[in-house]
Image 1 (tube, rainbow, N blue to C red):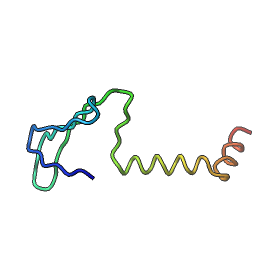
Image 2 (cartoon, rainbow, N blue to C red):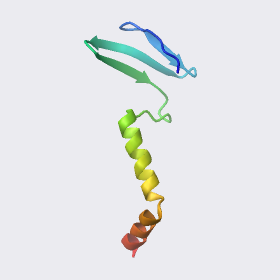
Image 3 (tube, helix red, strand yellow):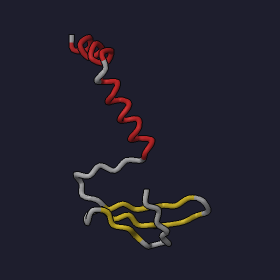
Image 4 (cartoon, rainbow, N blue to C red):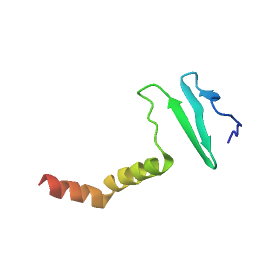
Length: 72
């Protein structure tokens, strides 16, 4: 993991097309802005984990049986 220090209005660039900017700092909370191409998905980690779990469940035997029952 790369750890960087940034101040308000400073940014980092990833892969020439993703920019992450520190917008605001209030106590222990930091607000960031992310500029990325539309084809690059950006998720909060807890949402990403939920999506991964839902995808795993959908691909399971139980998920396939539920889909078959739904489709008739």
